[in-house]
Length: 358
Image 1 (cartoon, rainbow, N blue to C red):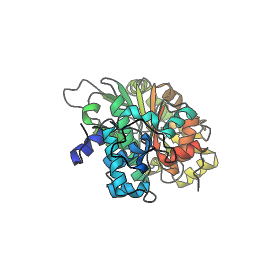
Image 2 (image 1 turned 45 degrees about the vertical axis):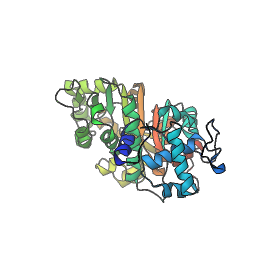
Image 3 (image 1 turned 90 degrees about the vertical axis):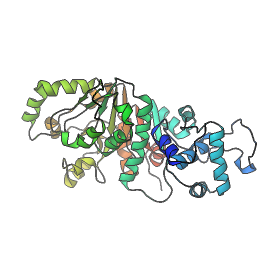
Image 4 (image 1 turned 60 degrees about the vertical axis):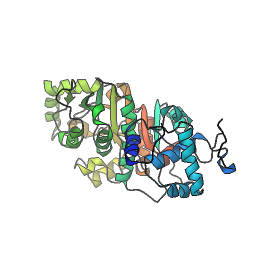
């Protein structure tokens, strides 16, 4: 059954099996199909273009006029793209995941960085976006990815930050209510919004474990004592044994979440940059090659280490926007991620060697 142009079906598409959508507009691989009702300019349009158009229409809720301007075609041609996407089964009630390997950039990222999957969200063409807009778009894609892969009874380890919070907000409640969750670090105040999204129903046979400490304590001695507490130690062990981990990727430029929560300031971020630090995951900082940079603050930190994170079977890193480029590249070089959810511009820059381009 085809997707109808209604709000209900748009929301269905938003929350079900849609995942990575990316298109290299310069590559159009012909596909065997009926040529009925197809204009000469439509011939040679490959799956990449069809899925990109479907994403913009059903997820971004762009009009056919806006899609036509995006692709530089007539409105009628834009309508034919959407019609073909439905007719050829790319869109039914979802953008079907079997088509995802056709996306060249995602496939190249997987090969270049040894990822098990890459979820790429197409950029919007109408000018630069605020980081909050980018976070919402990549979080939406991460939620769709998780919704297809979280199994009842599995343990989801949660990092902290805006993208993780939004991702959990977008995952359908009926899925989260069948999944155990555990925080990967201390910082109850930082997790409050996320934890509201993972509350279980009364009859759910799952648990939500929280490390009951700050992320950073006032001294190394306090952190050491808290780590030795059974209630803290047991939750950290559960975190290390998670089946899937969802983490954000912080940068040392812009307004990172660490500074928003008061864990660092502009002067300290500048000092980190001078040390060669490009980003952090779970408040552990690394350089461009992904090597952890030793800092005194780790003595006061409570959470699993990045080596613990790497041991989790599936680590999903979600971050987008060019401010995050170097941080994302460092995380990939360090081998901390199995799945990357990011934006089209970042994906292309990663394949170009990390250069943001003109």
